[in-house]
Image 1 (cartoon, rainbow, N blue to C red):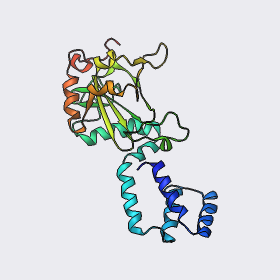
Image 2 (tube, rainbow, N blue to C red):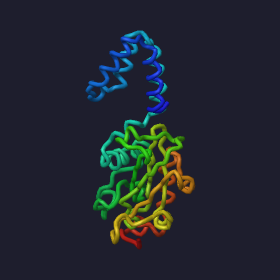
Image 3 (cartoon, one colour):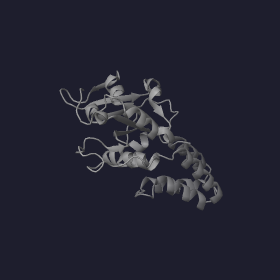
Image 4 (cartoon, rainbow, N blue to C red):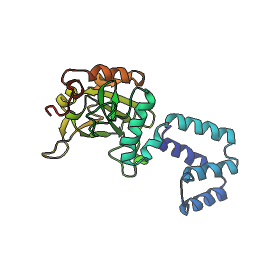
Length: 249
């Protein structure tokens, strides 16, 4: 059940209210001020329980259904930097404790060039959220589930292939997280790699509803992520394997 389906369900329940109660609810919603976590949906559900349209047990069942289908919806409300950097890096470290924040004790040459260190492999983490590109509004209202037919675009940007061994792309839908692992060389040779800014040193790779199947070769299950990163990261052309940064881009 996505947000649109929940709203349709609630509208049907509202129609079953007595006429005076329905008019009262509609009037109150027009002047309703929402402050997290008290929003319009919370108000409607509380009103419906109070008027006996649904029982508390039915409310709990509806809540469980919605939460299980939107377990990652809260990530769409995070600020871009918090989501892309802070959450993404911590998420990988939570998945596998072998992912570590780099420092000079792990890598004497470390100076902020990459995000995580894993058994000598230099890892850059990029995260993006699947949103409906045809819809206006904030990210939460445009959030998509994995099986949605609507078009989406995930832009994994600020890529510096010469500064890491492996890229981990994290794609977030409201009901699913997908991981793609690309080695330094795989990123540099990817046909969707492009300059982020004309003449700049940073690149980007866009994953969309049209090309996502072409990235299946890089898709990795969360439980296997660290092992695949290590395997891909120990290639002879990687900055970590060469013991230096740079390389051709």
